[in-house]
Image 1 (cartoon, chains in turn cyan, green):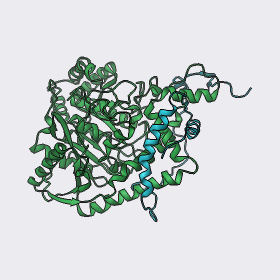
Image 2 (image 1 turned 60 degrees about the horizontal axis):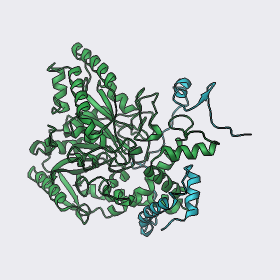
Image 3 (image 1 turned 90 degrees about the horizontal axis):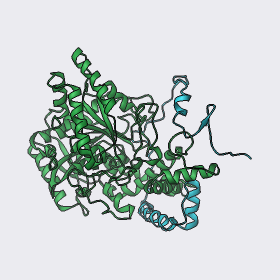
Image 4 (image 1 turned 45 degrees about the vertical axis):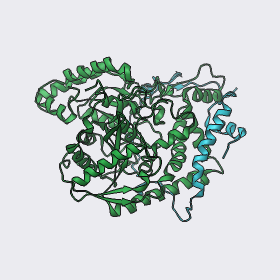
Length: 95
Length: 484
């Protein structure tokens, strides 16, 4: 299955990855080749087969809602690209 | 000292034949002298290692040393280490210094191990050749024009080149077993849920599993004793007692039923690799095991199912890298969208971007059922193949890879050619089963791996089987030219 240019642009938006004009054809070719591989699945009869979600059929554990971790804002912000007054800075969103 | 096994190093340290500082200096010197040839390490932690070694020596002198006290090891650069850069092989995390340790790292610290550094890997563990690393490829110590395998190529090559006696690694589709095979060492991917994934940077959460690499099965048992644990912080970790993996290494394997899947010996398998694996199977027969022909009919579907499930999970996991809280951020973003899209375009390499796009496609509205849903159903079929097989046999054996280490660039531009490298290893990840690779021969002076697949939580049995094989063969002690 080949993937159209328009679809690549949509995927780029959904993935938040900028794809340059110069690489869009290449990306489209490579993705098409992977989709061709995974399209083999379509021929398999899976009627009545349950989708597997965990190999040992484990379910999500629940725990008490207790505070166990201490707030480490300074440690976490020390590795951030840009912070001010304990806040993470990004370009202005609202004019 | 670098030719001693971990078992021998533990004895040597405890009987004061040598100190941990001496040992650590020896390995650090080897890394400084040789790693320029291989590129196994992204970060060397010499100062921390020497400090840890000195502390280990004190504990050894005091006589209250834990299991791995003073033994030098390496961590794959996917495990978060407090205060030490953890890059995951990506430009995105080139400047990331975690404020916490992964549970696996914590376990080794508790056991007194000395960490020499962090090993190179395919970017975000996505690759089978180490060629996708931001830090450049690792060279296979057996043939400098060939890949070490991936994604744990740095760990595997470092153990093969005797830069460390053991290393941690992770396996999502073969990333422990394939590089172990290509570098001629022993590596084990445990049952899904045996080793905590907390602090192990996520690729595909339903498949990722950490495991040990060393030269022998006995050493892998020692490392797994430390690595495996129940962890409250990983909700997929299974609460089940960790056995002493060293205790049963000496058990007899007489009467062991070994399943040999016809699908693992069909077209695509290099003839000489097949011969080496057959010779290993004959060795097990000589030890009293019985070979049983079996079939895993859905093997061929494992690669297509994997390339839906793994990218789908990756696209979700990697959405956290947004240039806001940590990691890379693009220069002068003009608005928030630009910050996200350019950070991710510049911070991720081509293969990672490709997988995010594929994953996004498979999960997007209108395609979810046809791709992700379908792949999860096929995954069930693959698991049922194994279930049926394990009704008749104790373990399954076959080749780890279709051929020995391939040359750099030889898989060309088509990502699918590279994906097929993992044809024999991917099914065990999809089923959540443990698998290991053991050196079983050389083809044109490059190592070949025998794969052992066990039933759930059968790691002790697999290590026992591999250890028994290593008692009567010596492929595991073979060293690349100029190394031993």
